[in-house]
Image (cartoon, rainbow, N blue to C red):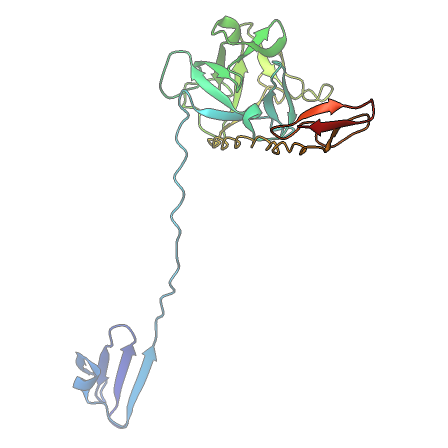
Length: 264
């Protein structure tokens, strides 16, 4: 067998190995140090690194705090709790407007809102959601027991309330707000103590809506200047639609029901 040299080159950090006829290694160095000859077998592998761009994961949402603005969505229907100006509360619309935006107020004051906390729900009118018997409305701005709810995760616990959580609101009566009765779509009441699909709401952090720019003040209409008739011109009479005043130095004198004239 003729003398053989074998070189193995790797694309990233080239390495050569040379061997004699007996198969004994003579060097481990770069390619040039082995002196590649005509009977040298060159084996080369190329390793390519694929560049993959990784976008940083969005930060996990933090817990809700007292005074945060929230939407309350009915997962069965996709509708949101809505407060109208007259105090009616319903869940017939899927809008994300100010009528659907509520301020979450922690009864104990500032801080993270947790399952088991007592809270109030204040709407855009300044009134708070109220449970009166089984009825739910928003006619009063009181912060009494009728307006106070226990916000809960399913099964209880005291974990923080996060945006996107399924939650329940227990009223002072021990009943929970229910909004998804298929026989009464959109009606909001507090009839049962269940933690079921009729009572389940998803709480969402509401983006702050920018205040609309004030409307520009209307421009008052321009009153055209009054043009009076010159001397000896008509200034009145039945069905007359022209000037009814006279220029300085003249006065309008009636010459009959059909004609008046400016006379010096």
